[in-house]
Amino acid sequence: MSENILRKEEKIAFELRALYQKYGYLPYKMSKFETYDLYARNKEFLEGARIVTFNDTDGKLMALKPDITLSIVKNDTDGEAKRKVYYNENVYRASKKTDGFKELHQVGIECIGDLDLYDVYETICLAAESLKKISDRFVLDISHVGILTAVLQTLNCGKEFEKAAKRCLSEKNLHELQTLCDTYGVSSEKLTAFVGAYGAPKTTLAKIEPLCEGADEETAFAELKALCALLEKTPYADSIRLDFSVTGGGNYYDNVVFKGFIDGIGESVLSGGRYDRLLARMGKKSGAIGFAVYLDLLANWAREYRETDVDVVVLYDENVCVETLTTAVNTLIAEGNSVSAQKAQGELRCKRLVDLRGAKTC
Image 1 (spheres, rainbow, N blue to C red):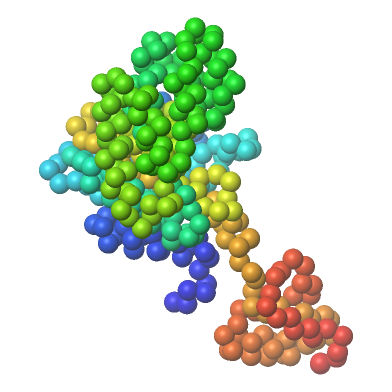
Image 2 (cartoon, rainbow, N blue to C red):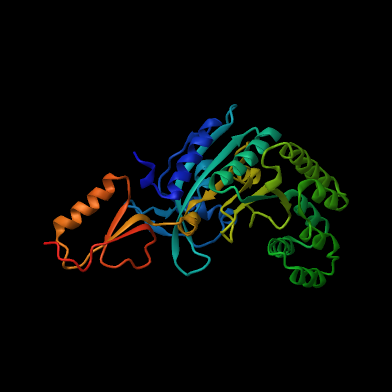
């Protein structure tokens, strides 16, 4: 099969699957829908509350998958060996930009079991390598939700405050964060310091270390420091940053969390982290970490970065007979070109234009 017929995002999907297989990840295939009850019981772990539902033939309420991880965790059984799977699936979520639902294409991995530092390190490396396969110009931002959670809990302002503060941190909204702290009568000094803590791991760790004075903060800081020490020795070191505005959103992640960006797209094309609390909520004893690559975001980006849509555009009009047009098109294809026969070029970009218009050929 010629690679020329594959779109950029399709080629990336194949390359990512091959990458994950090299590290022992097995393919995981699932249905497009699950029982609605699964999502109703775990709403706090979902990005949005809106879900596409329908009644099955037996009357049971079903839902189109808004999330893949929940399905994988639901079907996982605690075992001695870590379970490593990769997927290539679609999810169905309400769009943040419109009122409608969108079908979103994701490729990703999940590692479930008795996790340690190596598993976190390997996952981060696979995330970086995934970004590199998309573009050499990428940045992987890493944070540790445990540090922020511990700092917020020392303020004793309750869950609503913690939720609002994390949102302000994720938006780097210093003004709103200050207003929130004033409302609750607490100091904003530590939290605003985290907003400005961004950059190379070594220098950023030095900035936040004085902020991590409690036992929980120190434990989470030590985990992050050990991870960064390993990542510093990888080929991706110059593309990795610490960014404490990466909070993971909602209650999904409770440990290391990360987001990946590439030049040319204004939002993250990869996100992931460790989510042990979700497994505990579902009665599992294991730990878990994973990430997803949002291939749907790459479709328009790939076209913008592609110089042409087709090798040759052949223009014709009513004077050109079908036999002549067919011969011209097939000759060009036989030479190894992709060819589009058109009556007008429009916005099609091509390397070469063949204009048969204006001359009688029949």
